[in-house]
Length: 173
Picture: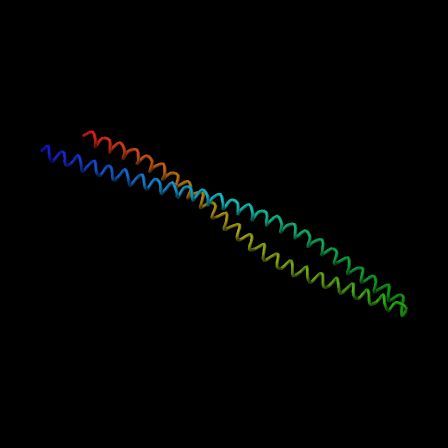
C-alpha cells in the first residue's frame, strides 16, 4: 500500500511539474503576443496620425485649387476684356487681339488642368478615406485583441500560481 501511495505521489508530483512547466511556457508565449500586439497597436496609431496629416494636406491642396480656379476665371475675363478693347480699336490693334486670344487660351488650359487635378485629388481622397476607415477598423480590432490577450495572460498567471501550489502540495504528501 505504501509503495502504491509513493508511486501515486511521484506520479502526481511529475504531473504537477509538467503542468507548471507548460503553464510557464504558455505564459511566456502569451506575454510575447501581448507585447507584439501592443507594438502593432502603437504602430497602427502612428499610421492613423499620418493618414490624418495626409488628409489635412489634401485640404490645403483643395484650397490652392480653389484659388487657381479663381485666377483662371479672372484671366479669362481679362482676355475677354482685351478682345473687346481690340475690337473697338479696329485694325490698329491686331497685336492686342493676338494677346487677348492667348490669354483666353491660357485661361482654358489652366481650367482644364485644374479639372484634371480635382479628378485625381478626388480619387486620392477616396483612397485615403477608405484607408482611414480600414485603419480605424484594424485599430479597434487590435485594441480588442490586446485587451483579450491581457485577460488571458492574467488567467495564465493565476493558473501558474495554482500549479505551483499543486506542485508544493504534491511534494509535501
